[in-house]
Every structure is written in C-alpha cells, then in structure tokens.
Length: 166
Image (cartoon, one colour):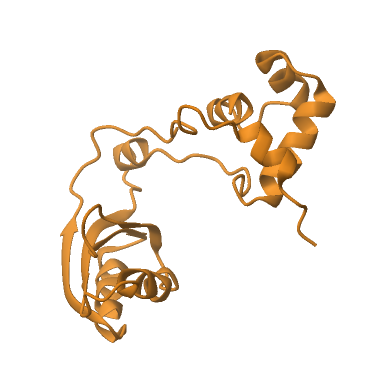
C-alpha cells in the first residue's frame, strides 16, 4: 500500500525514489508495480489536470453528476445497468450507492452541448427508469489521491498470490 501511496503523490517518481520512500529494494518495488498493473489496480500513469486551474484560464471541462434509477429492483439489476452505462462516452466515474440500486455517474466533456448529448444517451439505455442530472457549477476542492486499502488487509500478500495474466 505504501507503494501506491507514494505513486499517487508523484506518479513520475522513479522506482529508485519510491523504493527509498517505502524502505524496499528497487527490485521489490518494480515487481510489485508490475503485479499491480497485472491486477488492474494501477492502470497507467497520467497527468492530473486541475479543473479549478483550467477554469481560471477559461478551459474548464463541462461536468455533471447524473443519478440513474434502474427500472428493475431485482438483484443484479444495478450491476447490469452499470455495465451498459459504463460503455457511454464521457463517463469518468460510475458508482452504485449504498443501500440502493441507484447509480451515480460523473460525466465530463468539452462543452455543455456534448454533456447534454451524453445525458440524452441515457434515454437509449434499456432498463433506466429515471435520469436526474445536476450540472457542476464550480469545483471548490480537488483531491485526486484516494486512501488505499482497509485496516487488516495487506495488499502485498494479494499481489504475491495473484497469478499473472497472459
């Protein structure tokens, strides 16, 4: 978990500097990073864009939070709907809410018109009972770093026991 935390703070850090930061060898860090990539936990290294700063220079993306209610309340309905919704363009995040079959998506695009088209695309997804969208006016805080893991769960052991994908 320390490796993930170090990489979240600086995705461009060398394996040597990550190894120093976490108190491990470069070989160990390299092996664990490869395993994390194979497991799909690390999905690449990309620059983090600040929506706040982009807005300050007149280049912010158009974002909206979208709430989706599946037509069916049967077990698995939300998961099936999520698979369909995840295929739509401009969906950055897609969550299922606790104690609910409701989904919440974050959509981001270049323009209000493109966001409107994304929201309209939900009407063509079978199984949606209702769509409620809320445009985002302003971002007051950005924190792209997510805490990693849960107490008592050691990621290193999962990494080591995970078979490589072919």
